Length: 70
Image (cartoon, rainbow, N blue to C red; front, side, top):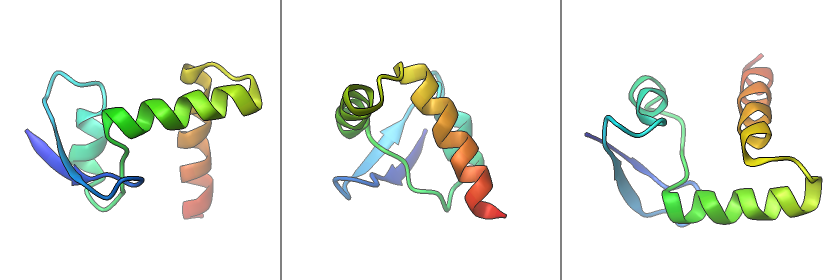
């Protein structure tokens, strides 16, 4: 199980290997992630503002993250 600091609430949280984010947290240790509580709040707000589904918000997050690394 890996732990990371939440990007929003700044609290440490753990991710079990069965969670879909496990590989991302394992291989991107320097990247901040959102805990379940904050992630849900962020996606709900983004969905209201953009009209995108949570899945598409995740896709855009990954695209923008790769773009910002260039």
